[in-house]
Image (cartoon, rainbow, N blue to C red; front, side, top):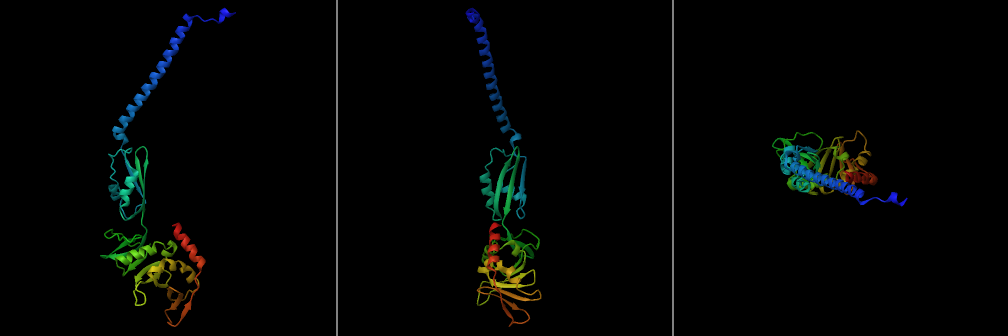
Amino acid sequence: MSDKNVVSIEDRIPKLKQARKKKANRRLIFYLSIFFLLIAVVVYLQSPLSHIRTIEVNGNTFLNEEKIIEYSELTTDTNIWTINTNSIEQAIAKDPVIKNIQVNRNFPSTVTMEVEEQPVIGYINVDSDFVPVLGNGEVLSGNNQDFTGNAPFIHGFNEEQLKQLATEMKNVPQSIMSLISEIHWVETDEDINKIMLYMNDGYTVLGSLSEISNKISVYPSIVSQLEPEDEGVIHIGVGVYFESYHDNEDVTELEVDETSDNDSEGGAEED
């Protein structure tokens, strides 16, 4: 019985040699695969296959696509693996029109740029052209943008006043901004920061520039207290009251809906 379980050394040696040979072959194949893979990677990185083929720019209105790509210094000869997206974003963000920029690599050969520009708070007349004023006070002179009516016309402001207006108006909810057709600087002896807003619904609002973003948010609540046929000026300051065009002595004290004010401010923050 025991003789049948004994395997002679002569029988075992060929099997050991065969097993070692198979193991050596597998190891050789593995190393050859790694070698050729590295060769392929090197060839790919050195060839046009690794270059950027497409650069996509999305979300831009005032800055043209060519200008943004110029800031990025990317070309179709740039290796997509070597670009530093953070550095590119910092370079593009230096333009005052840019509020936010995100650069992404979409393999195998596309780079996308998602652009968020400063909001338009109004338009001013420069050399017979209506040009946008951005939320940072920047005036895009020479941009040749047509007046589209999606922001108010601004009149009588100097450069410093424009920047202050931009600071105020960029905090105004869009629902209120869409109601404003014109903003005029109307300095008085009593208030050197007095401005007048002409509204699309026919009313006029008179207030101080430094307080306009807080006060104008209650405009819908104020208008709801007036009759449709009423015409006049809504004064917003320490108090809120309505002065009729037809009778200077007809002054109506108006209540301010604080709840509406808070809701509007919350909506502005979400934007």
